[in-house]
Image (tube, rainbow, N blue to C red):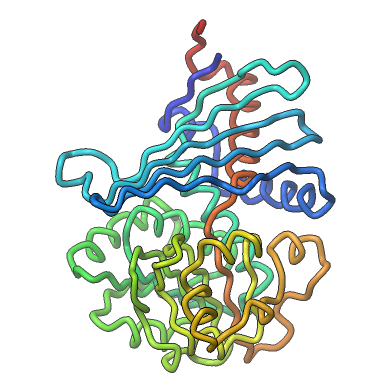
Length: 329
């Protein structure tokens, strides 16, 4: 079995690689060539923590995978990472277990890449400003993907603690070494989103973090932070103002996206308002942005085959490059 660390993955695999590999996987999924059972979530309420178990199989490449990821928000206080994960890859021809891969970075990378794909279809071609709401680890790859897709001139950062936004601003040079635009820190999320063509919302908030009334016509939103039914970082006014709302999977958001579940249960919004899934968008089965003034929203709670697609590609690159440690089990 091949063991791959985060450092080794970073040496092999880029955001642009992930965008291309996920674009292919979205087509496989739309063609019914991917098995993707619903994930299992274990919640540890006393710690406000959770563990997610996510299986999948991609028949065209003969790979199956299961990702196990844990999210413990209080870990930094004891010197450990908030999010930790591994992906086990197996061969679907003979059942051989091929690799165990660090999943923490790949999770962030694939989530950013999928948002990048959504941004390509849903954001204005002329989009030049982005607001990052929530400056944790997940936001790094979200911003990196947007910078790959659009010519961004202005980045606005908002975090509940200003110090974290300031720290995040220092990381942008590593995400996009050739970035020459302006970077600003805002103390008001509504002010930040009111000036943005693209909004990245990556928080664990249980209440909306900006007002839908602050959105300007033509805005596109990528919402990736709330992934459990009680979390809600986007308010119902935002949903009602959107002309197109695209999910990573409809089944997933119905079960896990509090942004949708809370207003739907209150009778103020309906899942029938969803435009479709990102796979439908990538395969041309549904339209992307059609008018400059549309407000659009991509919601992702995560799905196993995204992880499998990037992990399989990393494994192939590692084998060709002779990277990683081989162990006998």
